[in-house]
Amino acid sequence: MWKLSLIVILILGQTTSSQAVISRGLQMSDQPKSVEKPTRETEIATLGGGCFWCLEAVFEEVEGVNSAVSGYSGGTVKNPSYEAVCTSATGHAEVVQIRYDPGVIGYDEILDVFFSIHDPTTPNRQGADVGSQYRSVIFYHDERQKEIAERKIKELDASGIWDRRVVTELVPLRAFYEAEEYHQEYFKRNPEAGYCRAVIVPKLLKFRDLFGDKLKQ
Image (cartoon, rainbow, N blue to C red):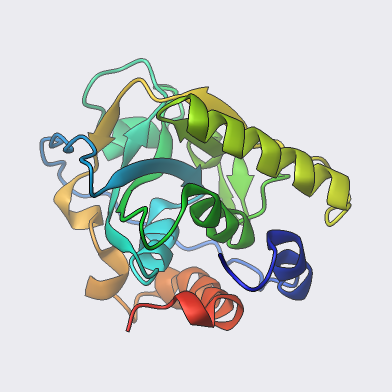
């Protein structure tokens, strides 16, 4: 278990940098790919908290995480394109599907990181990214994940860390569609891009500061 509780971590890291409005240019879509089911050695978490580039970049640095894949969940259209999701008409959220080793990191610890790197009190937006595709949402894979997430949300609301209540949606995962190839590992490929420097880097620095003992070696 981690040395710091989520509440203490969030209090220490409450101050976040402002997020600039920077266009994330549209490109041709690739066909979404399927994602493997969990095995005895791995479990899966599917989370949405704003731009998937941000969550992906952070979780790729977490010890015990085997992969973080950007994609779409929660909508009504099969195999949606990025352009379609950006209209907010399909109902999808930008999410990251995380495959992790439960022997190294638990689901509750995955959620600790998740809640520390985005604002779960702002409906349908994160900073300058506005739209239902940027909503805070947890897509649970089983009842155990649901119970853990419900407990986390209650703890956060009771803590009084934020002036507003947590609005993170908690819904069962129905489908996950992998995003186009150019979205995958976006920060690694484009570290000097404006959005990466203005939005992703501050989140990474915050994570590294709060969870230094959980960084991949």
